[in-house]
Structure formats: structure tokens, C-alpha cells
Image (cartoon, rainbow, N blue to C red; front, side, top):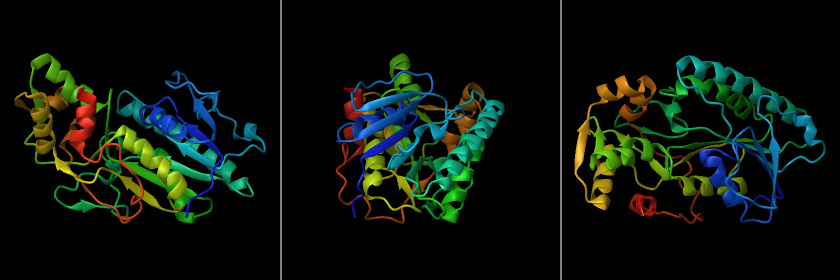
Length: 304
């Protein structure tokens, strides 16, 4: 059953996913508020009210009686190294708990959609993972997962309407695709493959990631966790082969050890991980129309 939505509050609307989410929401007849700390918005719309504040400082009571129907949480402080990530994760956890306390005090709290990631499942090799799988955060999620714990507890207690969405590797302009593949293509005229390439990399275009989150705001069920990914999961070797075919370039193999030395353990662990992602909600996106039904379509769009 479609949820009726008039007012939406987006936390982190200037982020990689957040800015595309705003573009999706802006297509509907909605009253949109957006919390942004420092970065400017990439979209201008009379329907979007900008609120300048960090999540850690925002006064939830300032909303007064103008409570949104849905809050979509894409905001996260980031750290440059493990120590900084642990520190900001603690700040984020406190901020999230403050938000949950405010929501719990409302007579009719809105739906909260929290955007996480699939690195919380860890590396599963050839084994499959779904929303019920054991959590074993790796890479950047080792530290950032601390901020998700209050949200998970609220979902477990079902004290307020909460939904968690976990996008996989989200690609698009300016993402890891640019930093670790297209930049090397530009400098070396080759497509890099990190390690043996047998690790599974579930990926989704950022436009579809945003579209699926918006779709779940209308159609998803509170109390559920939803994995977000494209229909087919590729190995890194298969992904690199598609890139090589589209660019008509050769593949060059790069050592994961060298990657760890250059970029650190968190980046190394992410690219060494393997995850065959599934969902326990196979029919939830039956009525969703993908922008890029195949990975090749999305890559063509970026390369062009």
C-alpha cells in the first residue's frame, strides 16, 4: 500500500547519495526540508527549504509542530584515518540518539529511513548475504558502524517507525569508480584490476540508489531492512572486463598489497572483500523502473 507523503526532511542533502535523492524527491509535489552543514546544494528549487546546521548541533524541537512525514538520514561526518573515524562515529552515535529521543517523545513519530551500507556484512567470499545475515563490519564500517547501533536498537524495539536501507557499491560521477578506475585509465591508458578479481562486487548506479530509497519511502515497511543493489552481481574481474570493452582498453593487474601501502588498510579491505548480495524482499521493487537495468547501461552513461 502506498504511503501518503506531503513533507520530507533529508539529512545530508549535499552528499553523494543525498544530492541525487533530492533530485528524485523534487520531481514530486512535496514540501522538502534539507539539513546541510557546510557544502552547497547542487540543486535549486523553490520546493526545498535549506537548513544550515550539523547533525550534532541541530535542535529537533525547532521543527515545532511542523513534523515531516518521513525523515531520510544520509548524513555522516567522515574521518581521514582510523582514529578520526572512531571519533566522528561517536559524535554521530550521540547525534542519532538525540534524534531518536526526540522521535520517541512524539505522539505520532514520522518514518525514519537510515541509509547505511553493505560493508556491515563483512566479506563473505562465495557465500550469500541477505538482510538477516550476521553483521561483521569491515573497512570504513568498522568505525562508522558505531553510529548505526542506536538506529538498529530502535528498529529492534519497534518503538518508532524505522527502516534501514543498505546500498552496496554505489557508482556514479565522482565516486570510487572515478578514483580507482577511471583516473588510472586516464593516466595509464589501461583499466586496473585489483588482486585476482574473483571477489564479488554488487554495485548500483547512484541514480537508482536514490530512486530506490524514494520508492521505499512510499512503499517500504517500517521495521524492515532493505539491501539495495542491481539485479546481477558481478565479480570484480567481470566488472573490469565490461569497462575494458566499453573503453576499448586493456586490463592491468594491480597488487592489493600495493593498494594497502598507498591507500591504507580500510581501502584495501574494501577492495579485497567479496559479497554475493541477496534480499529477503525479492518482490519489493517489482513496480520500480530502473534508470539503468544493466550495469553496462550505467557505465556507458558515465563514460559518455
